[in-house]
Image (cartoon, rainbow, N blue to C red):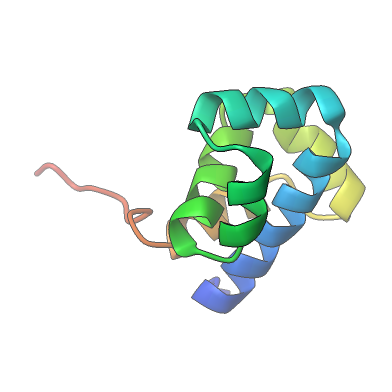
Length: 94
């Protein structure tokens, strides 16, 4: 089953909620994006923020596992969601 952009955005929103519940991880996320908390809250539904959330989670396998376990999602769901959002297309170089 192909992931729709709408369902991918929902996964990203859940991931942002999970990051926000992890105080130390939220600080790392904010530091890596250059966002402050107020800006993150104001822009949380924007595609580029949601893409950044999934890209961030995928930097660390433990974060993927932690989020997916908390959200009762298969581990592959983060990558599937990322692929359905802008810029997530696989590049074929041949």
